[in-house]
Image 1 (tube, rainbow, N blue to C red):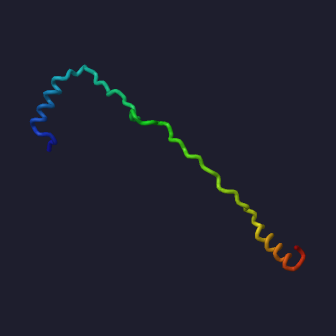
Image 2: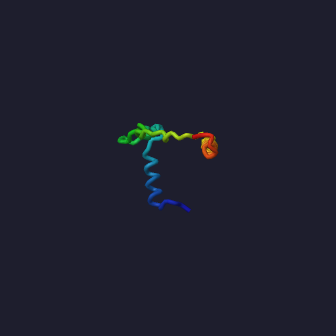
Length: 77
């Protein structure tokens, strides 16, 4: 089973016969992988703002409860 019709096979044989065997085949010239109008610099990043400062003292709730109880018992004004 052939993939080419008989006319195409004959044309390829004719072309192959015309090409001299001692002519070296040159590889294609290397091309750049980067498109000509493509900017390779990274885009500018928007500055990030730090989160608002929070008091992350885990004993704050205990402190407030003790202070509330001391004020309720009359030890603090």
